[in-house]
Image (cartoon, rainbow, N blue to C red):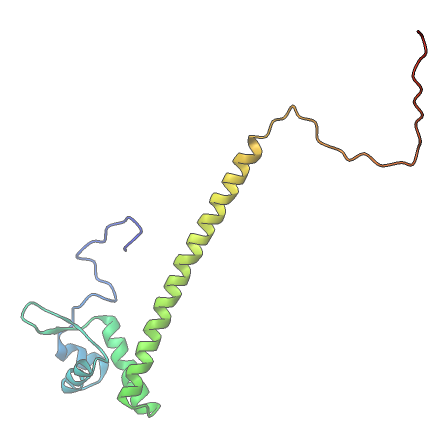
Length: 149
């Protein structure tokens, strides 16, 4: 998990771990292996490659294969349209991640601003008397100098 400071176990299997060879992936997705190769060539589903250049599919890839088949057969969308849908879904996911990242930065900046504001308020001198505005009156004061000379 990047950014969390925790190291992932290299042997831990996740949805993105490429573990299935093409024959198993074809069986799990209900598609012919040649269809999987065609989808790979078109860029619809791009599995990882093993050292011998053989395709290795993850659970996420298999789910995406099922989604491509559902869009193609049930919804009647052509492969170019499916590719565009997948690209847009990936773009939306990336934008959501960016928004979450920016929200975190904004919250951090707001907290820093509040701390700086609190530090300024804490630095105010406490021995000063607050200014109070004097009400103006229409009273007249007469001044007469003393004549003691």
